[in-house]
Length: 397
Ligand code: FEO
Image (tube, rainbow, N blue to C red; front, side, top):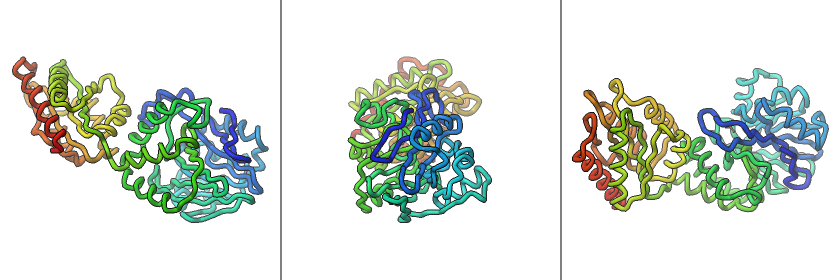
């Protein structure tokens, strides 16, 4: 990444990771960026660092603007290692006068790097620090994404450094939202929300309300991943508003895994039934779809129909792993149902319905279990099930 001037004396100095394809279990087909920002003022300040593997790029970028040793303050908006991995080496190089972070940030930094003698300065929501010509206002954003997370707002320039919020795993040579394909950025923003922030919807609603009430006059939102929002701020704020209300459309996802194609046949017949009811549907075979893409689909669908064969009195491992992942992300406000083929014990449907109920998903069918290989009468039963589900969903249950 080259440096980019966001406003006079405010630079993007982070790194592009073109190659990363797995981000703790989230598929990042388009790579990512680790954004860091530098303000040149009486107190030269660096906001966040980068993943340790990319620290040379960060140092090179800073050096193109100023000698890194001239940095006075380092602000840590978020301690996760994709933003703080380079911090120990940067602290050694810079010897900052202050490391500014939230109270939870200080605790997490000590737990990560075990340097109690770093020059921490703890800030909280409302704290302001003058850099000379500019003032930084801090807003704690606990759990968005970690307990330590916070925003830093440059008051005079209207720039919000938003850490993980509003980000995307999206590697580009461009830096701004109006320089890239917006539909692609929104798709990656939705995937980021669905896989990182979905479970924090109530906190996001509160944060959006608080930030609106603060009337900050935001001119630019600069997250720690992906492009910077300057022309489409309303679009990303509006999307977060929608997503955090769990406003999914009338659409059924049939998410399945199959041992010997019997559950697969059921899935296709159920999909035909749903389609006949007039409800839009999508078939998702877990053998070929990554769990993090499935979560993005779940963000936009109000009906989840799960299918799985029974294996050793349980679920096939792909479905078991997917349900564990999905449960952690707490999708809300959905209808659900389950189906599957079995040989002799047939626990899979009960287990899937139980998982849906644990997620507080409204299970609207008892569940359909068929022995071994479905015949044409069985497939008619599947079609009828799909039609029943579609009708109930379209009628709003
Ligand atoms: Fe980009 Fe929560 O780290």
